[in-house]
Image 1: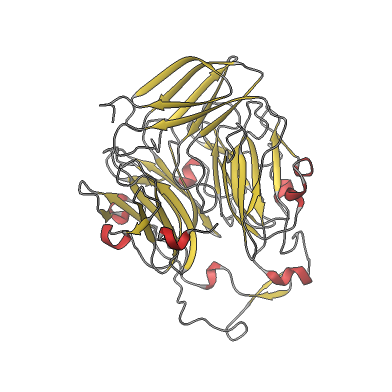
Image 2 (image 1 turned 90 degrees about the vertical axis):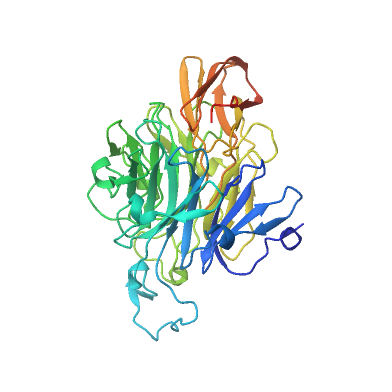
Length: 456
């Protein structure tokens, strides 16, 4: 049943996305919700109720907020917050369709995209010792002075130096990659690192972001869902830079008819290789009456890619069940093991429809799930990296707040093991750089690893 009202989270508004973290370190996960107008930070009481403390703590913001994610970017032990924003938009002064200029999309008159409105800046809130936040976007170098149209975001250690970097997918403009300088500031390096635009230098309509080590290189790569006829971009992390592997991985061509949104790397068959899912749906309802060009129409099916273990994928949505082929207008996507059977399930948010829950019933291999418990205020160990080695192969996962397209995944990390009955080692690199290792771990279980006191 819906308990939003009695839990204290039923405030009306134009909601966009959310991210989750234990902001105050009391052991209970809090909710940050973005939208048009003010954002909300719901503090978890631990008794099935929440209180909005966004204004009190200085993170209510304003404007049109979209993506968000908590992370300890300065490694001071508490969680900070990044919020991407889209355009300047006045809900109280909306033009009627046709009363202002319209744009043409494949010969059909539509409302103009984000370039029809001025862009706006992004926000970075640094948590202080008293638990309140200070907005430091400009001084830290992530303010977005060009006013690009920010959507999905990802905190990840792109270069493996132990400090979290920040990726922002921007609609119709180049994407940002902010490299952490380890002094509280960032350097924007999207073009230099090869993750700002398409392989031919074109700006794309960046929506959602997935992070994963799909090729077993030990490095985290980026996947960005984009607009129709642009292709979804897979940026393979080569170490010092990234290369556009979209077409050589066989994920690019199949995505051309679709407008992609929520996306995630996940090992749906537990064979030890991260697969990939993308949910789709256009932004122009008019296309249902005029399917022109390569567009798949307003309602679109989903894309499911099976990792072949050689750097390429096979699109297998037809094998995923009827839900993957159902025509919907999807946006958000989150993943997690909802029934605790060791297989990763999916939750999809559709426009003008109920959420869709996809229970994973794939014939799967052996598996291990890992849940981390941080020793300090960062109780979910957001920013930590887990390396699992079994049968001579290693896999890595990172703990992130804010995933996919304006969504939040389960913090428990799933590792497919194929036929391996035992994991040789599990190594956790905690957000402060300290490590914990377990050896000879049995498969098919949830392993809880706690950070030793004093390691935070």
